[in-house]
Image (tube, rainbow, N blue to C red; front, side, top):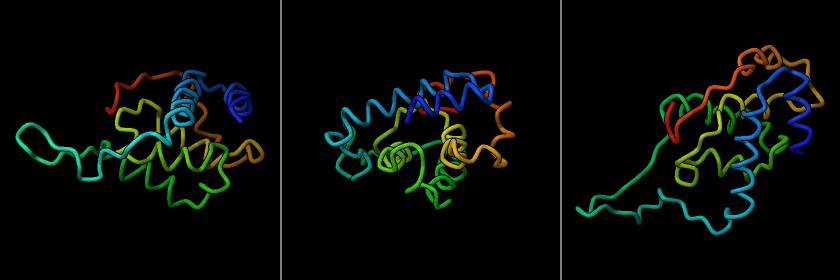
Length: 136
């Protein structure tokens, strides 16, 4: 799967750092996903006993993550559907650095269908823009 994503990214002129980020978080999911706990379960409190929750930025949460989950391609997507649900849940991937817009382009543009509108976004990902954990 990752080799196909790397090949597709290279064919489209995408900076491979975007795929590296995706691969890093996919590896963490495969290694620790079943042992991870969701920090938004309501069982995390600070020293003052206030319940702690974690949310993505507005852009990631309401725009991109929801669009990925609701588009209908999750079950047929190139990345593991379990990984997508994990990565797109702020309680599990609160420190994500993977670019959700790039992830969306992978989900909505599987390698078998390179002629979709998302191919035109290749220029958008031609130069890597680093993200700080959990920020835009």
